[in-house]
Image (cartoon, rainbow, N blue to C red; front, side, top):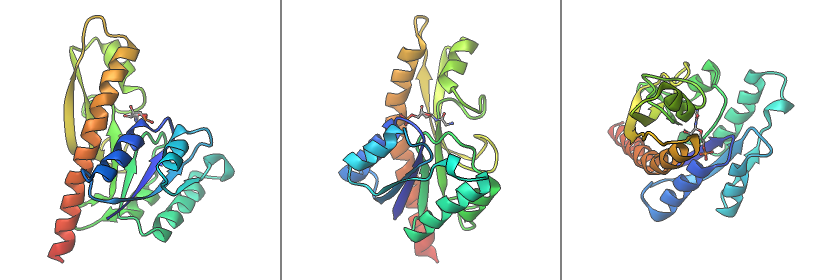
Length: 201
Ligand code: GAR
């Protein structure tokens, strides 16, 4: 099973997943990391782990569809089975979701992590949203990606307690630690589902 990661930012989830691949918790080969942003820390995380990595800068393309076609060509070239959005801050178009659609699964072969309960909040800055809402508890969610924004089928979710003295920094720190546990677990669960499907056909 070959994994590709799309990442736009610092890459802490990427780092946790690469380490889970190394330890054998995630039974797959991290075959490719693609970032849409030259300054993304994720590119350095990939370099440090000796994982092939590429910048496919969104600014070098006229349209989202051309940018995604360049990504799809690389996924194809590397024989990627599952794509992990590890802090990828762009909404995928129906083209890329369709390109990775797995009919036997009834889902795309794309996973995303979201720093909130996707049934309650979709979009950016999930931890800031939870603080603004004054919640006692929020969540982190791993879900399949569909054509909507954070609307795909939930694979795994973990509750994140919130405290009266929480700041964005403290909540984010605990939330990220939880993301780093949940994402590898959920990824391995989906890998096992995909392997069962392959064995059945
Ligand atoms: C994570 O908190 C992730 O849940 C969030 O971005 C951060 C990426 O951090 N993703 C989204 O908001 C997706 N819409 P990282 O680059 O350190 O993994």
